[in-house]
Amino acid sequence: MILHIDPADEINTIVQRMKRSEDQAILMIIPDECRVLRDRNCMQLLVKYAKDFNKDLRLQTNDPLVIKEAEIQGVEVWQDMTASTHEDDPEKSATPSKPDASSAEDSPQKKRKKASRRKRQWRDRIVVLLFIISGLLGLVYVNMPRALVVITPNNRDFTERVIFEFSRLAGVDLVQTNVAVTRKTPATGRKTVGIQAATGVVILVNQNKEDVVVPRGTIVKTGNGEPFMTIKEVVVPAVETQFFMDVPTGLRAGQGEVGIVALNSGTKGNVAAGRIQTIVGYLLDVRNPEATQGGIDTTLSVATDQDVQRVKDSVLREIRQLTLTKLYEQIGNGMVLEDTLEVDVDWKEQTVVGTETDEVSVSTVGNAQIYVVDSAKLTNQAKEALKHVIPTGFQLLPDTLEIQNITVQDVEGWRLTLTVTGLAQGFVDLERITQRLLGSTVQEVAQVAANHPEILEITVEQSTGNRLPRYSRWLQVVLQ
Image (cartoon, rainbow, N blue to C red; front, top):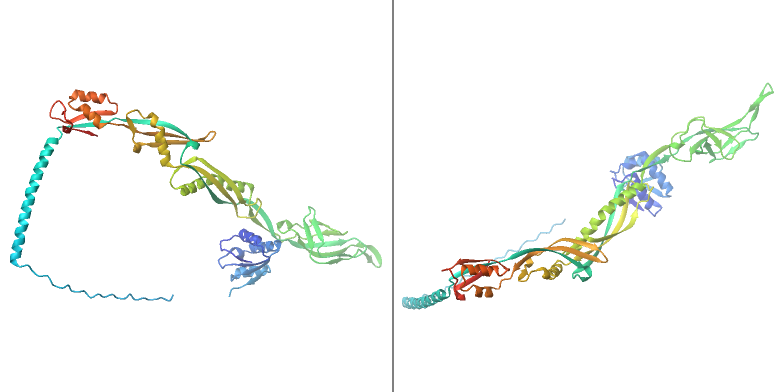
């Protein structure tokens, strides 16, 4: 499998991508801008995990520093070795056509006859027009009102609280949607990992009468159990008698020196001189005359419980608003009842606690539903519900109707409560009121207004006397 490494990738990201690969053979293509693998510790860590994951790792790069570090770790490295079209617009030419000059001039005698005939026609028309105007002026004078009365209808404000049950409310729809959400947060946990094992030398001491062969891979330990392994086979000679002048003077134990390497990578394998005291499987004494050294650690970021919970809390805070925004886009027209919003959170994926990673992620799907009311239908039903509160003689002005303070409650089923405000205007029967006003005095006009609650005021603006005309054609009544 080929993995293209991004210049911004950290070592944890590269290791995780290699781990997730299903193929055993991995070819990593390293761009020249990638600096992370120029570091020896990072290269050692990459090689260590490739071995742990049983991956056959190869690198492809032209970066000499990366090539150098890879060769030190024994990793194989590969090196990378518009016709334009022109169109001419056709030129269009048009040859203008010359009109034929075929018109002929009338003779002078014909011209004089035409002029005389036109004058007679205009004179006859003017005479007829004067007769018509005179007749119209006479009609206007006979039928022109002698008085103007202005009636101002009475207006009443109202505020009414209306309750609807969803089961009886027309134009209510349930709208559903879902939103996928993924959020991330930096990992705050830390984990120390050894990337290089410590090495050293031990001396094996044989107090037995026979030689002891210690094979490669024999385990020796410190007092607290830190294990090391011998790197080659060694023969430890038996104890021998020492003579002086052919006289036995004592015994000398056999000794053998062998190199060791720590089984656990990291600085835990760097132990002081004399700490290695036990050998597994052999009756030999063991000690390390010098401290072991060379063990190296590195620190990795890991996911914690607190990291996972923190990103989950972030998702829960956002998902309600995200689903609501998507529902508004999906609904378009209509009154959205936000109090009916229900969101079911379905957690899909999340970073496992303890995973080596720079960031913790959580993915979820929010399944949401909400009720929507058709505004026009709700307004019409509100009008019907308000009929019983509108006084007799008044009518609702539809343009003044305003719905406010909408609340929704789930009490044995959803209920919609709203406050409706508006203006009711008195209905004035102009024909009936005109008949009452004919021949009335100013005082009688005021009494007519008082006897009709639907009328706020009656004003006489033009009149030739103390009484209004007795004939309806001379009395003009208008609504303000």
